[in-house]
Length: 363
Ligand code: CDT
Image 1 (spheres, protein in one colour):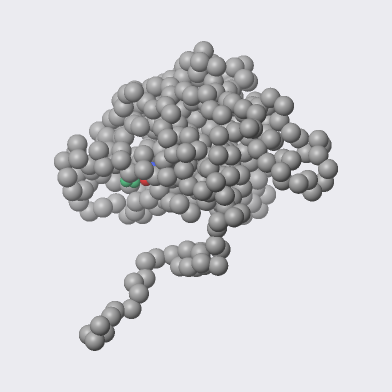
Image 2 (cartoon, rainbow, N blue to C red):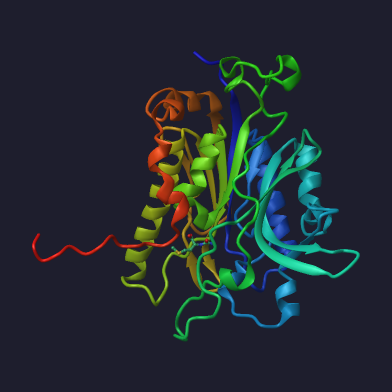
């Protein structure tokens, strides 16, 4: 029996951030959620996708200045510059004061060529701030961008213009260890070089992975984390509850959207033997409905905590034992024993659906 490796984690579900909300109003709600989380003993808190602003990809904009106001700076010399801006610095100060790591989704404007030809690339990004490290230690840029580049012609349609505002992420699915969260974590200095995995697996600092919203629907996004031994995947989202251009009543659409959300998250955890921490922006945002459903999923795919509201700020808390990841990993999802790489080539080679040839009449 492995020793327990427990951490109290929380999803900081947020009500919609309206176009008319000031940055200060939004930030104050986030700081308030951190205070509530501290009272519940939370050591790791996740905010949703694009937490600092409204989910602006629903808005068709052409004015570069108007677009720029939603983005935070970053560059090779300061990849986590967002944390020095007035938009996010108070979160860092609060995190340090409370001893609480956080996952933060925001729009990143990455500027290169600082001394020469300036080039900017915009990403839908999340970062992980570690109190023990005293700095952000990981960044993930959303790989799967839904929606369209140009607005749909139907004037009644709800827009999803992520392809307009963002470039697909270029950092892949890189797991990382977060220090200071688990007592007595094994360190590199404690073992010989090239140690036997039997002596180290599941004993070091927690291994984390990050996804953003639409990524959770793609098995390809989860597996790299499973293969790197991730014990917890954190994911923030803004998921449309319904849209006039889709079939079904708003209630039918919302019910299906919630089902697909749960199905994707529970399958991702189950098939990779890891915890999932999923955090929504929910309720009405600029007249558009977003599903709630923030939840914490265990490595057997079971929901252990779930939001009780779908239209307001709410904390979803659970104390999770990372050692539970060993159970599926020693049995049905023991990758080493059961995966068959020789048959998976197509999934890594082919992007779109290509139907196999038609049958002849003789068959
Ligand atoms: N933000 C984001 O990625 N939203 C998409 C909307 C798709 S509508 C089903 C999502 O996958 O939730």
